Image (cartoon, rainbow, N blue to C red; front, side, top):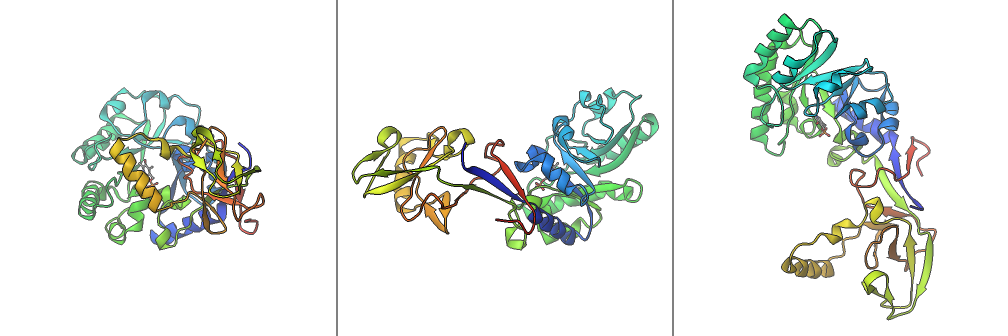
Length: 353
Ligand SMILES: *Cc1c(COP(=O)(O)O)cnc(C)c1O
């Protein structure tokens, strides 16, 4: 790829973190950095967040090894397996999310754990009515296990009635452990955003947060998008009115024009949404719709930039009319979708470009 990069605004992540603290009245913060910190780069993000959060959470041991912090790292449900316990890392907090896993554990290994309670997601977990039994069993038979927390996941936060019931269920089975088990948590990003969920979760003392930290959510409540993709045209080329442009002659110059050559394409995971095959009726509707409404994914100086024809493997052709090689082009793509190899620039307050 050429002239294509992702800017990550660390000061905005800090702003988001402070807002989460404010929203949750200073509950402890577990920064969720799974999925390469939601695409933003797990090493750099954990190094930056290290002094500001209480601990981290990842999805598997490979991610845990990349965390640049000596703080504790919670290995989240549901990917924990027996071999994860054979590690030389000494700052892992394991999730215990099945009775079977517990029964197989080596009683000679010291383990710190959070118990995951299944309040309705039905992925993994201990049923609420089995929690007491599990805790009793651990206290009686597993001197090697320290229960450091209990949590559940709010998986349907658009449904208020459902989620409130879920929090209620969690509260009922964990309330008695407040004060004896250090970390009780259920709020994630979308849970944190809703006042009713926060209120009902006031018995908890910790939050797990990913989306809000990076500004994927909560923009209407003051959270800030912490990233942006940008490109500059690598070359330009003059095309006469009536000539075809690109693969499959998929575009035609409506006037004498300059086209711009961008140095990224399908291999950076850009431009795929166009190629999904549906049926002829869908395609027809789409053609009509796209004809009526231009929905750009590239922008310069606040206006949309037209992509000409199909996005190629390493290049994308654009209409350069009214712009030049010096124009910076904003690329509307999510870090979760974009290739993780796209170069990232980490920018702190003051040196934002
Ligand atoms: C991913 C994940 C989170 C973080 O969710 P966000 O909505 O990004 O805050 C919290 N808890 C669990 C169990 C997760 O898997």
